[in-house]
Length: 355
Image 1 (tube, rainbow, N blue to C red):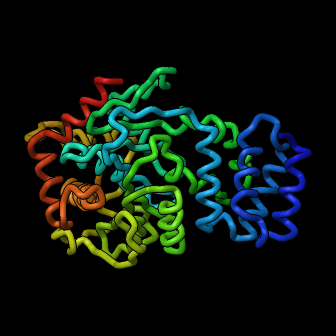
Image 2: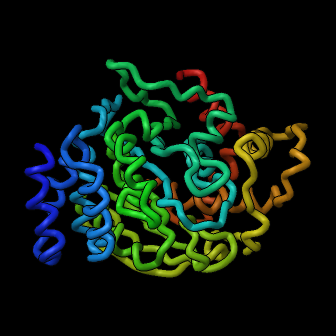
Image 3: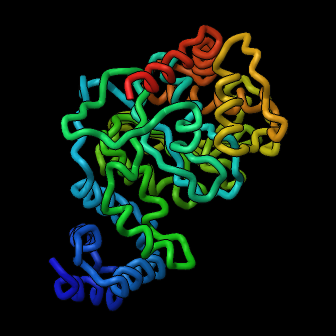
C-alpha cells in the first residue's frame, strides 16, 4: 500500500465521484492512515476532491471512513461489554464557544445512572474542549497501557489522540487546507469503545439525517442527532433544536424540540458562553458541589443558572436515549437529583481516582 496504489483511487474520485463506492472510500482511508500510503500532495488532493464532490457529507462515506479509521485505532477492551453504555459528543465548528456542556452533561448523566464512555479531544475551535476541562479538573488522562480495560464505572473519558495515531499523523495535512474536511466531523463516529447509544450534535442542519443514517450503519442501537436553530451542535437552551432519532430498529424520526419540552425556560446563548478551561472547570465544580462556597472567577460572566439548565436538558436527552427515563422532564428531574445528591461529583471523582 503506497502512493502508486493510491493513484487509481484518486483518479476515480476526481473523474467519476458518483462511482466512488464505500469500498473505495475504505481503501483510500486505509492508504491515508498507513505510513507512506500517500504523499502529502495526494492527501490534500483527496480531501479537496472529496469536499468538492460533496461526498464528504454523505452517510456512506462517513460510515465507510469511520469503519476504516477504527481498523487503525488502538484496540479497546470494555469491562461488562453488554452494558448499554453511551456517549454525548458534537462535531464542533459551530463558532458559539459555549460552556463545556457535553462533558458536563455526560458527568451528570453518569451520576444519574447511565454508563458513559465519552470520546473527545482538546479544543480546536473553542476556548475549552473536553480534554481541556477534564485536565483542569485534575484528570491526568494518561496514555492507556497495553492491558488497559475500560472499567465498569459511571464515567470514563477516552482522549482521541491516544487511540487514533493515524488521525494525529494526518493533522498537519488537513490543517494546511483552508477549509474543513471529512476529518473535522468524523470524530464523533470513531469512539473506539463503540457505544450502543449516542447523543451527537452537528453544526449544520443538513448533516442531521446524514449522521443518523451513518450511526445506524455503524451499528449504534439508540441515537439522537441534534442541531440547535443557531447551528449549535448541542440541544439549545435558547430556542428550537431539530433532532433525528431512532431506537433499536425503528425508522429515523425528525422533530423539533425546545427547552419548554424539558420544563425549562429558554435563555439566550450569551448566558451560557464558556471561558477558559480553568474557569469552566471551577464553574462546573461549583455546580456539582452542593452548598459549595467556591467562588466563580471574576473573568467568568455567564449565568450559573442558565448553564445548569443547559447541562440538565442535554443530560436529560442522554438519559432518554439510554432508556433510563421515559420523558424529557423526568430526565431533567433525575439529572437535577444527580447534582443535588452529589452523585455527579462522585462519578467525576471516581474517574479521576482510577486514572
